[in-house]
Image 1: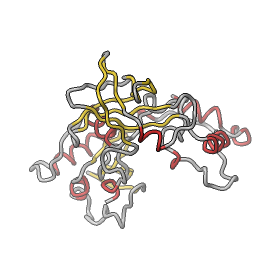
Image 2: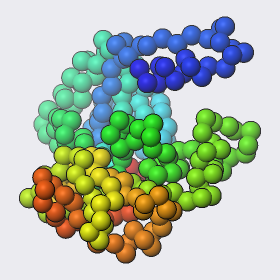
Image 3: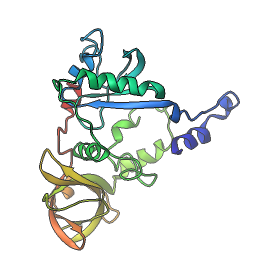
Length: 269
């Protein structure tokens, strides 16, 4: 509904008369196939096993595939930080595609497992991937959230977007808060909204919490500020951090980048 409202509100007046927006959510299905063996499994249900090689299907691109007689749009993206694809298809095709993938790994050769939402959440936290409504809201900016790469700040002025001038001003003045990753002892449960302390002073709160199975530590991401003053990497690295969980402060290790595969090599291999 947020996107629907945004598109309708900002449709250019000169094209609005011939412009319409329809919500087709209920007509679509999406299956996420992600993990180190996702290429081998998906290739096994395609006629050409070379279709999914990186040179033929680079990260961040999409192709139309036919699986079990069903036409799908395959997007090579991943919200879990591993090699993977999102398979988008008409809702009525989802069961056939799902069953074809399950049948392809009936022997367990590819190690496919069904994963729930908390699994997805924990994996995306390891990669520092943000979640709309929790880690990013209308009150946060791309620069604060580490999403400058998703903007066109370096593009020519003839590539405008809403908020571009405000972001350029914030970039020139310096951001006053930044989204960071924190790890604590695995006995500590992070659920979100735990206070972040730097050198004994409260500087922010955790926006999303979970568990890193890679590091075997509890993991959270959250914003750290500096009393409205520009915040530098030097300032962030110099601090001693704690997280307040149910009234008890626990030592925490701050990370400026993702705690797992910060260069995103796994997704691009």
